Image (tube, rainbow, N blue to C red; front, side, top):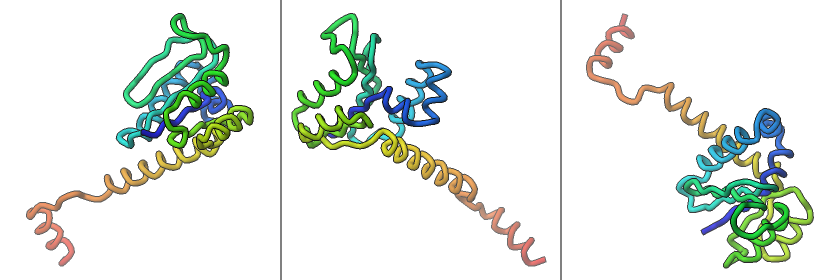
Amino acid sequence: MESIIIDAYNLMHKVSELQLLLKQSQDTCVDSVTAKLHGHFFGKGVKVVLVFDGFGKNKHEQNIDVKFSKTNTGPDYGNADALIKHLVEKSRNAKLVKVVSSDRDITFHAKECGARIQTAESFWGEVKDRRIERFEANREENEKPGLVTKNDYDFFIKEFKK
């Protein structure tokens, strides 16, 4: 299974729409990013790990894990960079890991371990483009009638013959 490890604060500080959410509330921003990523990767056999600096409670929601570098239980990694590096190193197959960050130190380490890398901006651009495509497809689908009944058909024939 493919894993995507995201340097969460790096992503939130590099993407303008997420910067605005982060200024309002960290929890709102985390919930919004989690929901968007869940929708984007649902059913694709991809595990997403959002890694944060500081204290927090790790949580798991379907295909999304939220991990903090410091928790009340487990090891203290000090910061998100160290936790991301640890996750890449302990992966069974680094080729199935993608690290999303614009931090050179993290991306260099990930590459050295054999993982793929992607900048935060380019990653979010792909997520956003896919959301727009789905929105457009749904809008077009809703504009066209799905089924025309016999009565509707007869009505339209009469109207167009006038």
